[in-house]
Length: 573
Image 1 (spheres, rainbow, N blue to C red):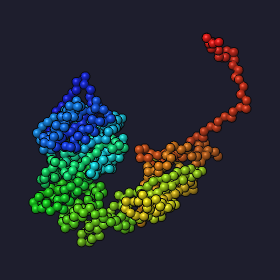
Image 2: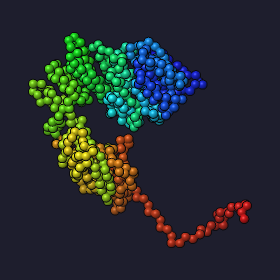
Image 3: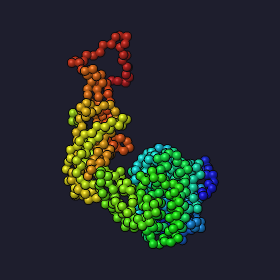
Image 4: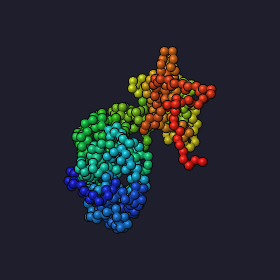
């Protein structure tokens, strides 16, 4: 359960309210703590706009003394010393109760910030009226989510990737936390951030992401495990997942959003609970049985087959074996995951499957569709050139499907009208791309990319079955083919360094005349914020031609009553 939240302290009118209240729970964080504190006091936002509330949670390694040293140098740093609470929730809550800033930002004592982090985060929040701003993370000796930190002024919680990150290291409007009485659950030993952030996400009006600057450096300590770690009981392994699923199920009415958010926790259930417990010989007997029984109870309550599409193929197959009590296959899959083997791909009937254990194994009885990864294949693309040639648009670049062999016969450029979804297809000419086949930019999967280039000319006057393209907004896509597999992608967001993306003059496709009072005009533009290539086609009145200049200009004769008066000047010689 959540602790009670006292009313927020009201600052005296003469006091300046800081922009950011930094919340720190500190336990035996030396020598990393020094770098963390130094990265805060050197923020370009300025310490006059920052307050730090650091709770020393019973440290025994000199962390408390280091906090006091910095507090003596910077009056904006406030230090509270207390006996160890057993986890970060209680000290963080104590700091939040004392915070006065417009925004809060949780910092782990062994991490550090980029110099401009707070300046950029506050600017984003103030400009966009954001309740939450995600700060781009960089992993130091540890992985971090990349998809969650795509720069955006506004993101939708249900359709974006921000729900991939449930740590509390984000800029959050303090008024939101006080209004919704949001605090860290002090009765959880694991996953307390997830419950805290899910509440904040669901209460937020606007969520933004600063993804164009390295704001936060998340570090793994030497040794790789937190000093507060201890063995968890089966109940502690599952409790936070069950509680956050209940929170989502109770509060989210949108079916797509509910499905996506719950699926995120089923991924965690498979990867963090089921697979480790099945794989490790440390978890045997009663411990393993109780953990899996608790995981099964969560599945029976919240799992829906419609969520399968939100899971990776390994997670789908593993969860299927778990739910169907395929114990032998489950253990094989868990051991396979432990070896982190990258499975090969099988291309069958225009679909791509992962050759995980159990694929096409009749004795295993696992449906093929659980291994299907066709929809996840990424198209790598780049636009190198664009030019007008009469009424034709010339485009050139390269595109290929990751993980599949080269040989893209049948690749097409697609013009798709945004409102009606009407499409026009134009075949492309394959081009040699020796710089992708070898040299300094080989593809990660090692496959030959020697013919991944494309060149195409689209005549806007005849593209529509011999007639001109109609008025509307036309998005430009590539339909890329390889090994019988087809994938579509918008192009233009990735461009070569020499590509000129500045505005171009409108192109007249069909001039006015012969009964047409307007001209059909196409204008190239790149969408915001994604930067994809599109065409705006519209009918416009022709611009009037400029009047001819007279051969000789004569001084104007004014009628006497309208003649301007000459200004008298004084002091002129």
